[in-house]
Length: 591
Image (cartoon, rainbow, N blue to C red; front, top):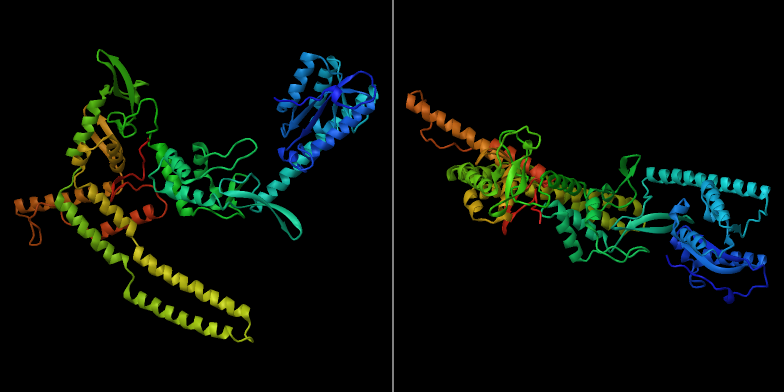
């Protein structure tokens, strides 16, 4: 710790006792070092303390041999004051100090215990602590007065702390922000009705970045690492502080930010989030979707560790249903890797070790054997999706005509009120209220038209992309690299259960689970029809074809509505194929 020492020959002091002193000056907040900086580089508080302690040294005829400034270390004990600890080391090691001169005991000691321990430690070294503003004298009564002063100082500190805590709690209950402004906001001071109020405002430089961060992450196409890189490339940097230079946002800060409901315009009071007074930067729908994406990343089990493989987190034991973990091994051919059931660790499973290449082939074979639907069925589903969306998406002609007539009436009323506004005798406040009401109603009708056009669009799009994947999943999987294979696995499956060299079962993700169930139901119906024909028990309406029938429009409509609700309003489940290739949304491959 750098210290500033003032040599004796640099001071103009009267002939004194020959005793030597050091000064200890302290502020609890670094900003106090900046007040009146144009007059003194150390700020008004330090300058005041220096003048008073110098005057005390002159009055006592002391020779100053050093000055120590504690610039804003607000520790409640001496252990939190590195400069004061440096002063004590200097006294102990060099032994060239007789007095430590301070401004006030309350500036140095915030509790009576520290005051007593420090005083005794200095006395053992032959050093006295002198307060420039408190002349206690010497002797037993002086010691008693010092002790009483230290006790009252501690009481005052604790009372002030309770008072501040109570006021801050009340501010938070009223929706105020009591912490340092988060990224995207600024701490500001305003004068309201003649009083200074501390509050927060949106940071015009960084707020847009934070809104974009939530929206980008909500797509599911980013890990926190990749999002941090994109934000930095886009120009997001945190402002410089007294401790830190201007810098990019860290991954850990970004991860906490994505979980922070403060960006919804809320503050936390007594463990409960309530509406705050600051402006929200994120919509509830986007925030909820971000939480689901974060949860999906945590639960996927594909965090990058020492041994990474694109099947980690996807393959599970077909015997005990526990996770497969990848382990290294050494043999004559050098280092190799194998999958081991976690149940072997507690001896609850006898699944043998499965070499990596065997596990990879088992999954590839499963795509060729089980992840397939007949082209005829896929085509009938496509036609059904179009019909179901058409039947349920559009606004009825009667409803559309009614809203169009209402829009025409609103336009006429707006023109009428605008004409009245030119008449000076009409009250402007009432006209303004009527125009605002008409404008609000007009916006609502326009939103209704827009929603009618967009209704079920997300669900329909997701289902159509799922059908695209089902056109040739085994071919795509076999010819793709590890990254695309990982994405495909996360698109289709929650879990793949493996026993030996074969996939014995799977948990499919939506919408594939629904599509396969529809296929199985229609296939079973078709087989039952075929059996009735063979047995002669058919009716005139029994189809002869053995292919599955077209799924019911109600089934497809229910699926589209559910997908549109979940994926269009905050869910993170989407994993589909885009125009440019595979686009992971629910689970993103770790880089």
